[in-house]
Length: 64
Length: 140
Picture 1 (cartoon, chains in turn purple, brown):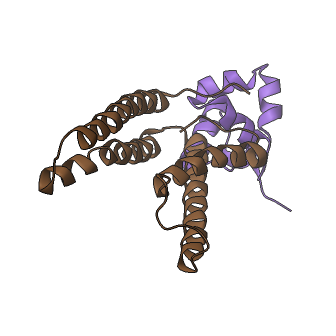
Picture 2 (cartoon, one colour):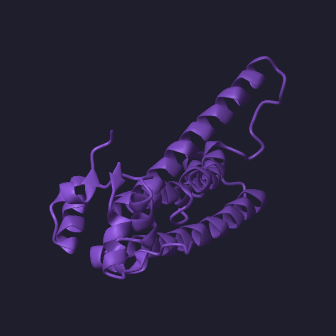
């Protein structure tokens, strides 16, 4: 699933480690989600949305 | 990429160290007892089973890791690793049994049982994760 994590991170000048700290997950998790290798569960997607203060659909994009 | 060390993986590492230390002690102690005593019957059976217990303990430790790991992506990598190990072990043992069925290899396993190949499979599963996902996450 495509997402805007990298852009949102850049807007806040956060590294993957910074975002991982905010989400309390590993940096590998952030990297895998950001590069589309792994789709997060709904609870983690909500946590990501909360960290950025955005609705989920503004972060994760429908394919096609 | 740095290897992730969660509290769950730390607990797993400690459990693994304790269980493997116990296994090494038991494998030598049981071997010595069978060579130097004439133990038989139920005590012999109990003694022979003793080294299997820490190995079973390692299976428990791996399963606890899957339960206790709070990072869902790392947990998914562990699950993939375990599934890879299970498939690898079943494949090796199935091929081996057919080779034995047709007397192409000797009976017995020379000490290399299913557990050995499952642990080898765990290592190969880490390589599989590295190749396909770019990280091993951590090392069960």
